[in-house]
Length: 326
Image 1: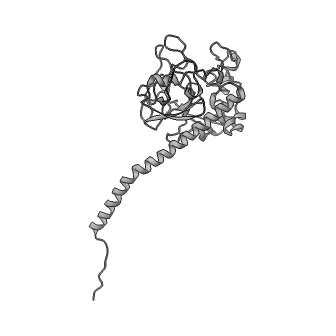
Image 2: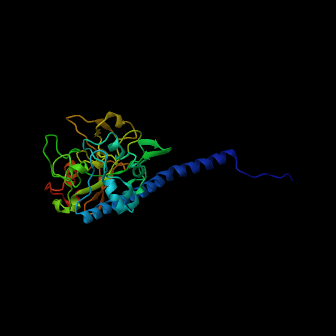
Image 3: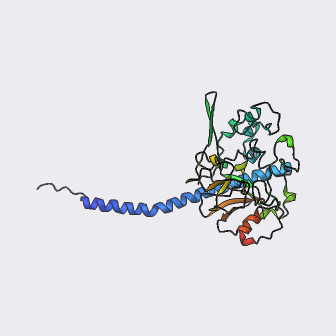
């Protein structure tokens, strides 16, 4: 008898392949959702670590770390390093740079965030400062002595109040303050007048630590966009003038560093009537993760009432916030 070869027909194979394709299509959203949940948990854990580092700094120094020292001479990222098991990086930072007149030509540049004295620190990627739901970026690069340095970006910024970068409204009236300030250059000291502001501590949080924002997420700008580039003073903080993941644009000082195209969020350039302003943003779509001054971390939805969101950023505004507002 002739041997009969048994096997699948072409139609049967195509049916099996189609069934597998349908199963994969059904499973992929669930797999992606599970991955995003894992990334969200990682982001929440990062915020808890950062909040703990900032609160430990406050316990040690009795004030919160500065948000920034002017445009270019250090931000809260530096002050938090010792409490994130990054003491060697903190020791490597040269903090003598300032914006006072009379410095030798080029000397202040060497001491900026990407100057020759500090680029080893600012080109180091610190995982705690990154949310895995977003993309990384290094908008500034430079080669020195044959070594290429890429200045890194971050996904977290501190609370700078509910108005604009200088923490006053458009009519010049100061609102309920913020837990983070700009201390200007070292030579201006910790004066109460501009450009140096005096840091504040827990004693100033009369609104309550559980209803005062400490840190929130920001989206890393891609290409030359400087949002999320938190070694730089402007990007180190966010304001609650814009709601979480607002459709309104962030306001940057220069059109060159505002790359208004996807995947970047919207942006525009500042004017006298529209000063610099940066909103809290994330890739989680429906909201942002944020830590409070008591160390707790909450997922703040985009639908939060804007009055509540702005009230959460003040330290002595006297607003009453209900427990179910978060």
